[in-house]
Image (cartoon, rainbow, N blue to C red):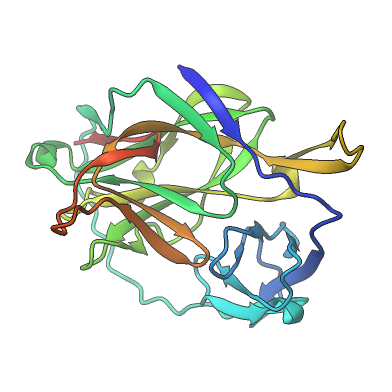
Length: 291
């Protein structure tokens, strides 16, 4: 496996103000950990810590922050009013659980590519996804057993969040298929991690499925170092958040990314409006199906 480049965000304390706050449950006042926090329409943001506290590095105090976490209603507030933010829990209708007779005597891995290019990016507070279409040959192995993901980390036990989405009528990622946050602890080094999701009894939807990952910008994932510009003799702090999920550079008709509080579809249309494939960076994520 080859890692060609890693792109980093450089954060400078001298250029960006620290916006500090805490996010809590509106009913009980308990802190909410690992909330996705983004500057609306920007690729700038943060993640709340276990005690609900967060820091966003930005000088744009007139803009708004969008807070989102599974099980809570999304909330948008002005940065200047984000010192204390309360999220309202969502009410869920209990659904009947269907228990199927899974044999698990056969497995197939879907999503494999021929790309030998693996590249790491530090994209910040966004969710990058990979789409898995449903094919008739999956009928005999319809259960989703594992999510396979190629990662690179310089620290042990870096935490990452995994998302599985159904497909909406418009083709965009829709409702999450697992009704709880799915966190994975990633070990140091470059390796393939296989995350067991068999206990959720998921089957591959007929419309297909989006699988994505969310980087958590928390203290335990952070590595800091100070660098000095030899020409100007100025210093800046480089903050790197692990783990990295590696990407393959391959031909795809589209990719979906959740950034700035909304889903963005990257595609390539010609002058006649026909969507054509183009080379894109897609997360190195596969699915293992079983019967």
